[in-house]
Length: 293
Length: 241
Image 1: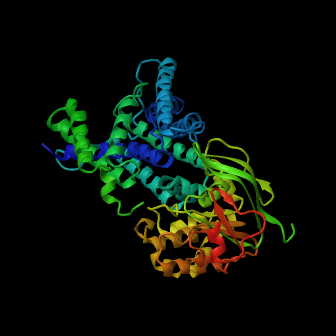
Image 2: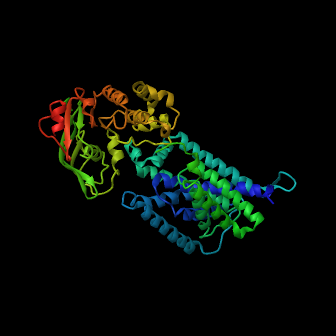
Image 3: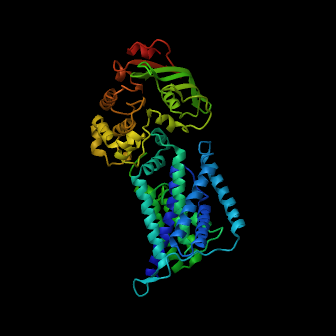
């Protein structure tokens, strides 16, 4: 039952979940905020891509850019509303959870009121070609495009985090906020960068997932849940852990769909995560981390 | 600015955490070129004084003039909100517990300390200077700091603070948790730092490490510094405070 088709589906899902989970994971560890508005960012970016597709129907680049830019803008807006006024108040974690949840609910209703409940399709930006790998394994262009573009953007983000000065500042803030302040890193400006970059990741994920699904006001709910659980299983804050968890959960989802049927996907995924967290409370990232605080 | 320009002038500083008041109406003046030692027991406010100057306490009131500009004032919330601005004005706080980034390598750590534009541009030369002060770090440049020993971490923390030229270095308990030989090496390293443009305050429990090596020695007790005349440099006098 586990054939080439399942593996292709698993890799596609893993790359998209990787985008979502890393966004949630970076925001949690650098800003201390569980960003519940991530799903709204995702949905809004879908509409941004759709809007771009209306203006430039033949340009795949415009659709991608529309999604990524909208995601980055919405991310920065969430930062301005939920992070800046709250980050130095007591109980910031709970307050920001409530604030981002409120943004998510209000934003979803705003999308519903503006664009209506009818779902919108995005153009097939990667075309409709299919590539035969073996006799019974066929990779469609949208899956190949999803994997390649998410891997490329992830590598770009990780390289930027690793080599740039801003990336160094973000990693410093992820590991010790007080230490970061003591080397002159401003929480607020860094937060904008973090939220814009993770918003852009959500935007790309929105465009990629909308190759298979549709753009709708509620499109962000499932990606938010998947992103959260992947980030949790990976150990919140661990980029490598989130990537491994994304692969595990992508494979679980593809295999469950093929063997048991699509309605069991969430059950097996949650069972796997509960198992991981029972054995390793810090998630997969806890296995990789050899350092001590 | 004259040579006797005050780098730090603290007037009536009170600070604390939640309902706890740690500093009581404290006054302190530090002049350029000075290397001042503050001695006192655990829990009498040495660290809180440093943290209040950096804006890290829960609340504080009173005036703190740093290089002639006010960085204090009354504040009842938002610890750390303006710390990065104070740091960029030329404060280097090497805190107790080192405030390290455990997943960053030693080299990345030192780079993160080079926060001013000039320091960032010349970070390779500056790194060489820091490695000259702490030679054991050279072999560890690519090792995550979370795997280092306590003494090596202290070197990283102090080295990070030296990557940008500061006007005021605040060093909190450089010998804490270290073996006597390494403690002495830390103090020796601090004594080699050039203070032609700035000043340094070292908080220390172990008086013998500082005796005869600092310009002035102040005692801290119950959230107050011994005011007016400075302590005579001698063990017995300081311990009577």
